[in-house]
Figure (cartoon, rainbow, N blue to C red):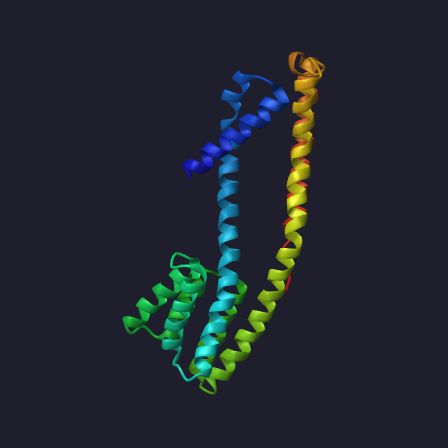
Length: 236
């Protein structure tokens, strides 16, 4: 949190300097937006971690399904999936850590369906919850558990695969959005550096500060709108 707060303070200070050119104002007013930015960075990091977990979960359930097809029990299939996640994403990846935790629970003789439900409770993403619920019902009701898990993993895997493709396709649009969002700042800095005091009136008069405040408000509103548009959830 402290690192996010420092980063937020630096970003806030840069914005205030560009729009107001006052060191005193930067020191006095940058802390409040820094707190907001720190919370936003934490939220985005959590969201990014959730997306990474979903992509790893897709490979996990496919590995579990493949092991079940070869005759493994669910418990042993999860152990094999843990090895596969460590090989693909590393021992510190989200899904590998979750599987390690789940395997430890199995070693304590916890029911495997409850272990999956607890995993879904810790990570309440729709596809994870659906898989845990279907596995719980299939195990309790009996029947061909392997076939049920295979169909479920295929369906969820296809859905997450499409989601991954859409995220990849929209990544360039998000990059363009970030570049475009920096252009107004670049223009102001360029004019301050090369226009020989052309914008000084905006930094030294009351009317100029009002104008820059309005410009800052419009700029932040545009950033917010662009972020909302580019961050629309993929409904699958």
